[in-house]
Length: 494
Image 1: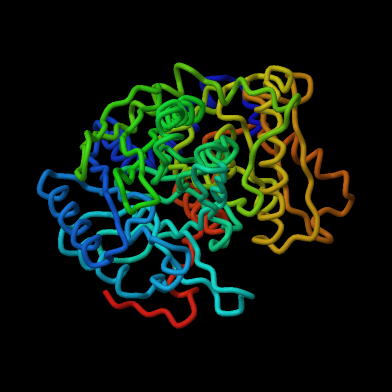
Image 2: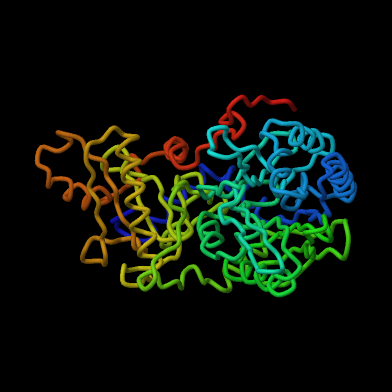
């Protein structure tokens, strides 16, 4: 926003009027922000076998216990439905997403009013495979029994040590093909992964970049690899992403050929283990404190220090949707101006996009880095990369929303370039044929649109700006499709 007025006081007075109209929403947000964002979770440890009914009963008992102790969300391990004794048995016992196993867990979620992370179950694969295979599917179910998200395990564990053990998932499992954006839950935004995925930091970094505050790794680690790597891998993922890491686990001997390490645990964003299961079937409880996530990220701002100019940026290729809601904080600083979150229509980890109080053209919006920096040269490589990727993304959305055919983008760097707000920012103006008699007139309008403001200058109201931002958010924060509706022959049995 480039404002040229007679004094700093005039700017502050005009924006005081703008923000006061939104004070009701902003004060509510501030009050909510003052509350400590702590929620209780339960992390389960199981010893699943090939007896499906017994495993289901164990899960139902664990969920009931967790609920009675006040947990809002319960985390179950990988393969919580069963662990087969042979590959053929694993395939034969598999069920579709709308089968009895998930139906019973939906009922449990409703009965106990908790959310469930079903670490994974053996989902029946498509019929058109050359040979029957299954999918290792991680599911999040809400307290109303609705499936909020499904994630198919991407990295398959193939272990073949001559004379010791052979466990090759790829023999009978189809690998997942996409990263699922973090899921909004009562405990925070959860990035979904499964077991062997923990060895691949690219996935956790991609999830954190999309806004995850928590990453979950339901697992069935072997004894050998668990003793060597389980704890250090989980702590590393927590430290590098500055997320809580939640890892439900299988434990003990499942059959004559297979045993699991156990040690289900929760790691905080600083890398400290804050809860861990002892031996055997059971659960541990932990508090998730989102204020602590924010504190760690603020005091150790590694996301701002990344040298993306040297090694690029880890992103999820199949998902460009932002998951960080603007309302995560009530007010954003733009130079000396406070922008209410209701005027922000898109946010990434390092940048914000917001509507204009006096647009030159319909859709005239602004992009700025989250951190207040006066000049482009003050930004670090990660911020520059994020800023211009955001400009690229937002430009296309604005063209579509305002039915424009072209765009003008301008950045004013320094006082002589027309910058009046001491915070580097980019103007995006959707363009249509004939919007100016001479194309270059737009630069004159951009230079003068904020000159000579008086108390009679017509500015957009806070309500008008909030409404435009609300309409634009739809393009960035769409509700994901119901996984069950996408599944052939699915039905809501809850």
